[in-house]
Length: 316
Ligand SMILES: *[C@@H]1O[C@H](CO)[C@@H](O)[C@H](O)[C@H]1NC(C)=O
Ligand SMILES: *[C@@H]1O[C@H](CO)[C@@H](O)[C@H](O)[C@H]1NC(C)=O
Ligand SMILES: *[C@@H]1O[C@H](CO)[C@@H](O)[C@H](O)[C@H]1NC(C)=O
Image 1 (cartoon, protein in one colour):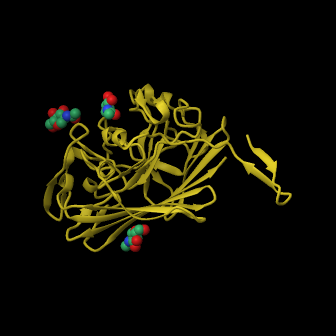
Image 2: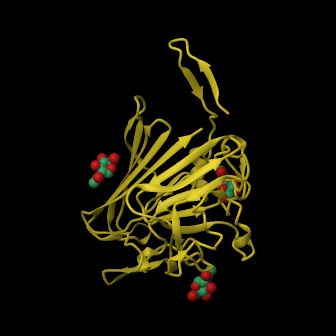
Image 3: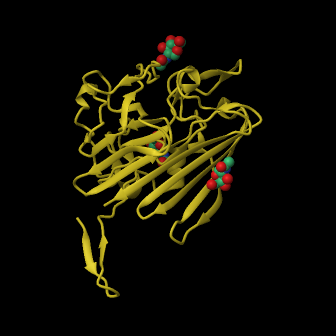
């Protein structure tokens, strides 16, 4: 699994691991614009679902764009993943190259109140480490903000088939149960004794039968991440390739999604992606928090800043 050679300069072993492209995606911008799976998207203004495409804030009712049955999903029909961002700064060389993208979301966009300035900085922050830092500043009006990075991971390589054999560990003792439309019921339930229990590492597919027998076609659920601050959220390991990924983040929750909705999607290099062909670990606030006062608030007041930090650490 490791390919090592003695370098000519010093008697050190230079080891090159088992490199591969582990993210699903497309070859062209046009396909991203047309796509419906949110491949690699930066999701907003509010990631995840808002029940019945509406909410009330400071006594005022807001109507959003329903794009998932009666609900709003991932910001509406034209969320942040479908808009054109400005490259604010980029440094290609050096030890920690980065790119910073900027988007100005206008008052009333997809029904949301107030102007919002959004930044996301993708940086290679250490050896084999990717950092994603997002921030959003509300201008003029209070608004919900809940951003998410929606990469589809397959550590066996994109297009290599199902991830059900990859091993996952989730640092979460509770989850937010949902109704048939994937809207949280409002309570936080223990994962113990349910198919959602990944507190110890287990194959992604090891407990999926418990969902399928109830007519649920895979994982698409928000976990309450244990602890607070920047902390471990998940570890994914692919035995066949020897690759592993650790995710740290500072958000209350993580949506664990096993690409249940993918079917025959033609992606990079002609690879075809199907159901369970990837998994997503979307750190964020809880779904429908804007209608659930008991959930951590996602309201950003004028002049205040929303912040979200993720770190992916790879070994191979
Ligand atoms: C656009 O997406 C649809 C499916 O959502 C697909 O059938 C079609 O081929 C895509 N078109 C392009 C240009 O990618
Ligand atoms: C949408 O809401 C209407 C009215 O409440 C209801 O009749 C319908 O079944 C809902 N549709 C879905 C897909 O949940
Ligand atoms: C938001 O992120 C951008 C880009 O990294 C940075 O320049 C800016 O200072 C950040 N804003 C705040 C309020 O932290």
